[in-house]
Image (cartoon, rainbow, N blue to C red; front, side):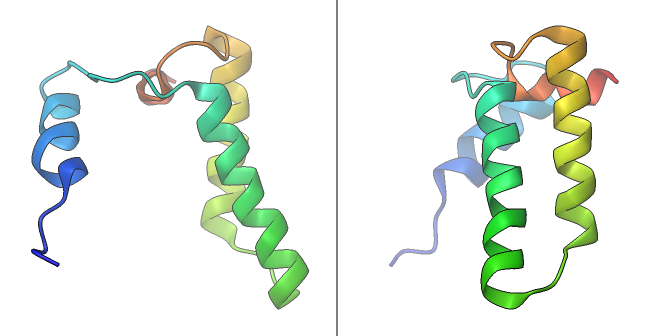
Length: 77
């Protein structure tokens, strides 16, 4: 492994510049965040406060902006 990351080198800088680049929708981000919660509850029988809150914020963003919008729209709430 080289230790390099496409996300760290390309995606994050473009998001910070206001250009999110490849689309990752709010719906997909919401699904993934909620899946983390479900898996953690199933296998560890615990809750993760941060990921629970993230799931809530993403749901609000889906409702406000539409689930097909870029996941970066959650920052507009």
